[in-house]
Length: 287
Image (cartoon, rainbow, N blue to C red; front, side, top):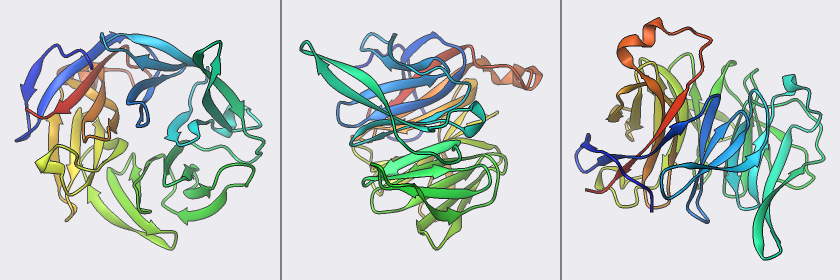
């Protein structure tokens, strides 16, 4: 059960509450582990677990300027860009019982290939995006990742859905693409802001999301947007903060958003090199 400190209703049938707020710099993303209903904040010093009282508890130390994380059945997979000089860009975090206590351990995969800047997983498959537009698919274990798809080059975010659909958000272009298989992709939606993260929700308790849909967070405007089946974007939540750093969805359909402190009125005056200094976790729950 997460702490809730404020309430505001945005989209019909959705109630938006703050569930945690604490100081943190170098934010990178948000991770949800479906097996144990655990929410983790990803930052440059590692992974931090959001506790029931709305505070953060260190979970994994993984110091890096940039890396991506995804949850799989085997554990958490961390992907590090090659520019950081790590010869093995993939690391598995698995919990192992020690003296009756479950502790996370980092296990580097014995793989050597160009690093990645984004990662997603579903149905036992791990998808890895490289800045040149190559999307790799990895079956895990000692197998080498294989080329799966080509998308426009540049920075992107990924989200994999059960059944094989892969969603690609092109950061700078504000476009969301979808690929049903590795033969190609089609445009799904376009939005007038940077796409900073994607999440898949199976609907769960929400009538508004019962068909299953992809949601994404935007930079600069601080919005969480749902993409309908026909590709039309629908704003679920318009945050007071200027940036949505990451979004995630729980098994019951709860949508989590990680937002950075700072008002939209002063967003334009912020330096491009500045980092988010504080965080707020927002969850959309049934009324």
